[in-house]
Image (cartoon, rainbow, N blue to C red; front, side, top):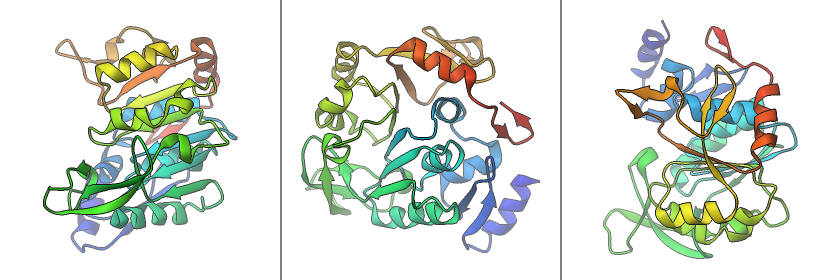
Length: 266
């Protein structure tokens, strides 16, 4: 029924406001691949999103780096009541991000920065027309526009995030170079990364982070993959998790309130 209802609405090509998790809503339209996946599955990145929902608390700062239309921001600020710093460089996507903040009445909890993250302040070329796959490109590339670039250390000056979700389509290592102060602060406990290079892994190890796997149903954090995460013997998670201060994070996950996802409280 969810699938059929959305397909009917999508045929008209207009934006639809649809109910989502714990009273939140999403403003979506056809072509928003990641966002519309939530309508079919409840959470389109289930383990990453449940880790976010179980870990964050009111008063935390969550950094949504590569926010796209803001689905993680809506979970963090709309469900967990954390403050969010939503960072998204594509101006067209920023309009959709702001719309999701508006329909959930999150203006007081969310700060939007329409910039790319990188090693220092300046400008970078950014692709056009790829939706969630837009990325930093060479200045010589075609179909790009120039956008402002800021370092994460500069954007978070004065406040340390408790959790960062970093999804910047292969530019993560450059972002790390501009986040040395943030990474070194003990207040940062959890990182969700689309991918980690050897240099990033070295930084994480130096700062005391451990690779982690999360079973949302058991509320179990582990250093080895759990059975739920396997398909044909391969870890199927789209993101990688890194945790510092393991007992603190474990306690938070274990004591979080259940979150209703479709017809089940998790």
